[in-house]
Every structure is written in C-alpha cells, then in structure tokens.
Length: 340
Ligand SMILES: [Zn+2]
Image (cartoon, rainbow, N blue to C red; front, top):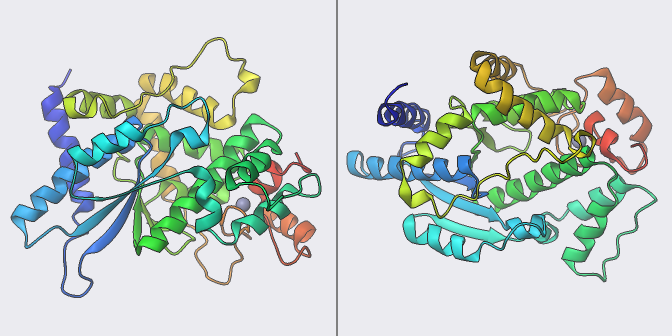
C-alpha cells in the first residue's frame, strides 16, 4: 500500500500539469473556466485541487491563469429525495472564496436556454402538451414525467443538464468546462453510451477537446479511480462536511428498475477494483476516437451531438428530418416516449 500523502502529491501533480495550459498570456488574458459542482466526491475534490493550483499560480506567476466559475444545479430541484443544499453552498464559498459562484434550480433551463422549450415539445411528441401558463418547475416536471423508462429518464436528464451547464458557461463567457469525472465514471459513461446507442457522442463525453457546443470539455481527474479520489478526500477534513456521499447501492432495488447508467456505474465500481487496468483501457481507447467536428454536420436538436456518423443516425434523420427541420440523433430517438 502506497503512502496516501505520496499518492496525493502524484495526483495533484498530474492535474496541475493538465491545467498548466491555462496560464495568463498577453494575447488571451485570463481564461474563464466553468466547474459544474454537484457536491459529489469528484467535483468537490476537483474544486479543492484547482483552488490550490490557482494559489500556486498566484505566487509563482504574475497571477492566476484562469478564473473559476462554480455552477451548482441545486440537487433538490433535480430530485425531491435530495436535501436542499443552501448551507453547503454558503460553506463552500467561505472555504474557497476566490471564485465566482452560481446556484440555479434545474427548471431555470427555460430562462437560460431559449431553444429548449421547442426541443422538448418536439422530442416528447403528441402525447405531451407543454402548458406555458404553468410555472417553470411544473413544466419541467410534466416533461420529465412523460419519459417512459428509468434509462430514458436518466438519459434525458443528462442531456438537459448538459444544455443548462453549456448555456451558463456561454453566458459567463467561459471558454471551457472542467468536468469532475474520475476514470471510473468515464469508463461507466463510455459503456453506458454505447449501450444506449450514443456511441457517436462518446468522444466529447469522455475526452479532452472541443465539444460540439463550441466550448472545450476537459476532464482533469481522468487518471484517478474513484477509490483514489476517495483517499484524496480523506486527507482534507475541510471537505468532509461539503461532500454529499453517493447513496450506497441498495441490494433491494430490482435490476430492471435501474437505468443503464446506474448499472454500468455499479459494474465499474465492483469490477474496477478487481481489474483497474481494464477500466483505464476503456477510457483511454474511447478518448482516442475521432469526433465528428465538421461544422456542416447537423447536430441533434435535443442533445446537441453531431449526427451522420452512423447508419443509425441517418435512419433517424430520415424519419424525422421533415418535422420543421428538427432532427434527433439515434440515442435521443430511442429515449423518446413515442418510440420507446
Ligand atoms: Zn440527441
């Protein structure tokens, strides 16, 4: 067993090296980067590491190379089973005061993304009628309730949260988003994406580089397994009352009621401990795939993924291409209520 302090130094070094590209320059000035914070283990640890990286830059160079914009989508607005996090939000700003903080409810997507309403209506099909006289919360609840299965619900929530995060990043003038996913999470995302027919969007969901939204996606924790992130968190008592631990997997829940995303995460967490090399390989292989970055390739109206990379995508374009030029990728088509 390696000394945890030694491991911590290695982890922090690797991440600081990744972040070294963001130095202050006379040409571009200071970068603005968005960190979506869920108060989960990984994103909170990432905030802690970036906070010390910025302090290091402040001392070593003429100033920090980037400003950090922290965005929290209020967990209790995503699921009523989550506790409100107002106190944690205050606490985290006290502990790491030199960043910009925003906390938004999930349903604020209607305010920040002007196209989402139309995309939702078309996506849900004739069985769902949006009622603009309802509150934003009620409208979002109604839309989410129209999605049939656990897998589709999780899938649709990911796409909507991604839209909200990207919209906020653009609003703040950020050029990049720093995602807190560990290697384990990226491996689970890769496997789940393929199983859900989203193989063509695996690249930007797991690799560093330009996303289809005109914003860089980066995954600074990509070399750490979730057990390593856990060990790291244990060394910092100031994180203990901030991190909201994941619900331990319950043995009572029937497998058929879990989404593919949850199943894959369970699989990676149990098998990843036995075969860490295999999980690292999944992520590394996926991140070497070429993405469809050409600007003339159409994007999915709902999730924003580039289409045309597979015959599946062309098929869905063919079926839906005449509906007011709104097009859905194969993955989204499978999550739609009327397609099931
Ligand atoms: Zn899509």
